[in-house]
Image 1: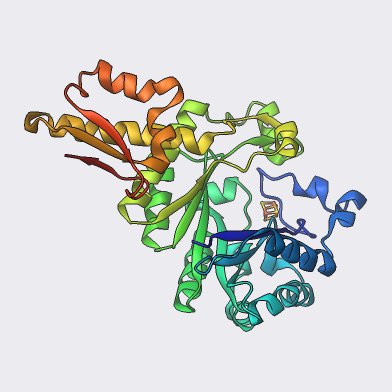
Image 2 (image 1 turned 90 degrees about the vertical axis):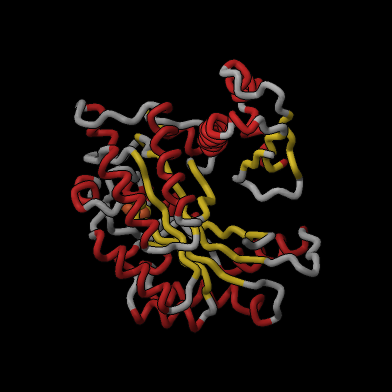
Length: 338
Ligand code: SF4
């Protein structure tokens, strides 16, 4: 993973789609949004500013990431301009890679060769689900097969591929969701993000919700589902780099309903670490282990709010005679018992 990610937010410039959970059609076409369209000078200034702030260590890697829209759905000229603004930094090795995010139906051989020409190395695809019924109910406007083909093409072409998947979409079920997680893992992406579906003001989902045709996941259910999805990706050694949406005041003001929590990812991790520690301690009870070791970086997630997880393990009698240590050298997301 890069040590420094320079985020460049491109607005949803003229997205023609109507995904049920998205409010972009209320944003694009509006003059305020047009004025937010990022200029090329701003791209350069943003990169310069971040490079100036960061003390680049010898081994540190720097990535410019174009976030916030379907990059390859932009007019070709606009893509070239944006990528062209970032490329000089790659040429003089002040930046190591460029990342874009897009939809699976906006990937084809021509796009791949354009991205290669501008040295893009990471492509994130919002596939959201691999279930045909869920994709249709969510009015995504692309199929599961298009997602699969896009991942295959990008991987064959040597890109690092990330996938964004959602839980709680209309028409989804635990069974369909777990099938999506399994299929997504089998596509072999390099990393994954898991987002819970929220009801956003101005979206089609808000209408469904207000008419009583959609019930959002409870926070507990969303945490449980995200945790089960994470288990699938962990089993395939695929990094889950984010769970839950990036918090912002702007987002918080727009949420009508749904499993929003500013520390969603940390809560999933707490749940996941607790359940793995409980199983491990239980399984090895007879061997009288002495030390339970957790990565220092996971300490806060492992402890849970007010040490709740530690207290629960103790209440189950699983920590008798066992010292819990937090090891700086240990890999994240691992638990060891000695
Ligand atoms: S989520 Fe769907 S509607 Fe919204 S910007 Fe992306 S592709 Fe367009």
